[in-house]
Image 1 (spheres, each protein chain N blue to C red):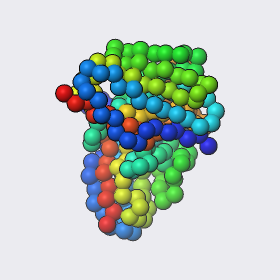
Image 2: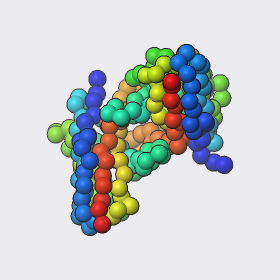
Image 3: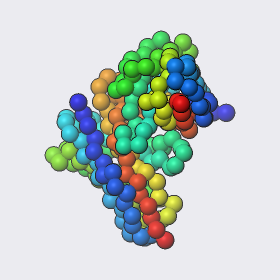
Length: 112
Length: 117
């Protein structure tokens, strides 16, 4: 079955730097991959979707890449701000009805 | 109010009791999902529903029951709660086929934190 691996260690960076988070999956390449943000005590919020035929997707300071050869997606936040501190989850479809499975998430802490 | 709401937000119960977590969405989304979130495991899918009266098991369905008699409601019942079901439960909904890829983009509720003593 499909498995998703995200770095379980928190990522600590300085404000203004670029944060890069990694999502690896183990089996077949999905038709698309999604990234969500989760703040403490809240539900995840959708950020970006990238399809298998797209190498890169951007939204404001966010950039996602999708490498089906490496079975990996990278999530970048440029010019990071303390408000970007949160847990970021990778998700991809698995099985019927395109139901999503999620990685465990990586916690990002941006320090002033 | 528009959106997806879960109730109760916090619940403490005892082993063996029946507990029902409610989920209500106002968009008439056909797809609804229940996940549990535990440290070290991330979000795991319990049950999902493609439409009213259509439900199916996810990764971790044992000990849970769902129903979907109306499109807008998707309650999750723990028939006899166990300590291992202590968790944060998230309900989500989606309109199928969003975007050219037909991808499900989920909108989540705020979660229900359940403690089983």
